[in-house]
Length: 141
Image 1: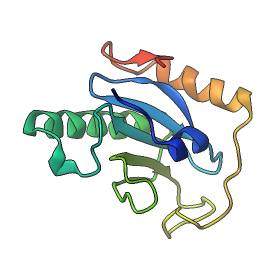
Image 2: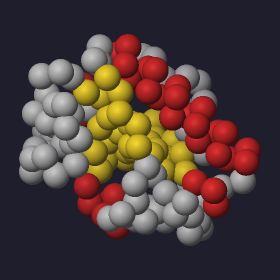
Image 3: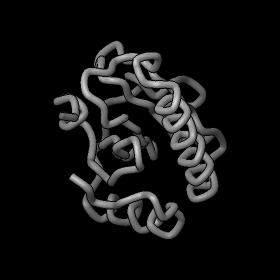
Image 4: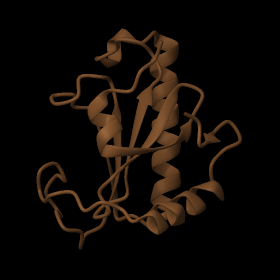
């Protein structure tokens, strides 16, 4: 059974599910920072997914990145899998602006997280609802 890593549970808000991955919003209002987590047990590395699942994860990542670039009018989209702190496989998709708090450096550890207010999260969900594909399900737990 798929269980979200406790650190991801603590540091994010669940937005919903793609066919393979759970979509999370990192609780740092400095950056529109999203995380895709394949809903598979005990997977810490990309190569542990089947080839079909690897392709599905990349499709979901690319689709999300394209939507975010348009919706948030991003200067750049950062995509990464690191897993040094959270070993569960997860893909970061981060909207970046030339004037953001960490630009041009990576966002990791640049500043303490600035938690979202509920109204900010609702505004992001509203933006995404208008552009998300039919296979995305909001509010899945």
